[in-house]
Image (cartoon, rainbow, N blue to C red; front, top):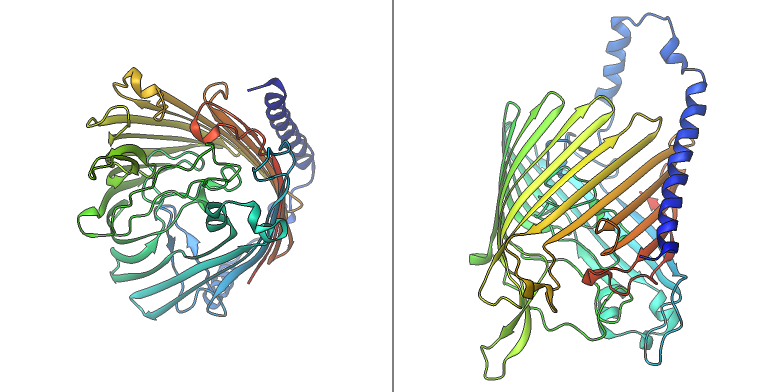
Length: 486
């Protein structure tokens, strides 16, 4: 990583930390809100009136800490006053670091996205013991028509120009207070990390534009049957995943695609039957401390290369190995600090240069989050993925495997103007010194009104030794979005 790219990262980090400390000092110097210093006595009638207001009001969905990322509903009939909600947005991005292309290559300079998106969701209860959630989105990107569709490969147009997707769409049955049964497309989040995946293996990711979107918005829903059982502070979950979906990756012709030629064809397992994925978890909540254990039998979201010799003319094909995982996650709250940890052992990885063999990998993560500064949260996470008994030939193409892959993230979030403005810095680094690749994203989100949000930011990339970061260093871009929520 060259000096200029590294200097940009440290400048952004120092600027964010210095700004947070300055705002902390000025905010602490001001008077406390009147409600804090008031000597007026609160009566029982005041408390009853307050609770009466809550009983008469409409309740909207909330995220429950023990729900593994799913929306636990607590309202009566409709979760939205009109029976549905959604978002209408227009987002844009412009690349500013690309060199002029060679003859026959796509020119990625300037406008690279002008995307209109409509997302809709609805929740209702047909009966007291059944809740139904429907959601989906569609988008169209005008940037490709503006530049001329002939300038792009068919793969790019198929992957980036337009999309129609059914997202979380499921039925939740609650026959008893301690039992929930879910069926349909869902997102289930395992683990405690917000930026790095270790035990979070249920949902594949959308990686087509790495770094531009937070992890929570990258997950792709999958169709599954899920049974939850609650006993005191315990939470037991079992899942059968019927729909086999994998990560969406950059395609040939994209400025995020690292190779000069298309990849071999991908072999996709059929849904259901013997290919069903299985997952189980058990969690316990203590005072200021949570712990969970996970077991999963699933497919590797990233494909490996194999020689397909089923025909007389052997050819290369990409296949997904079947993996078995056992893992654990825990977090501990100590004052203004939140300590996080995850670990997972996965077995069944396959590589082109070791046909017929399988390998195991041990992943471990440590993180801490500090919220002691006013309106500011700082989180740091580090993880390492170690392949056991890695042979030297796996370091060569097309595997490019490393015995240890180090990943770290720094996230600083600061609210201003009575929480109307939120500034975020996310720095993701691969390799102890960024030699495997890195990116830094700085963005600001401002609420013009309660339902109208404007976002603007910039992202810098550094090329590295990992395949997904090769030749990515020129993809620096500015981006923005205006979104109306209804």
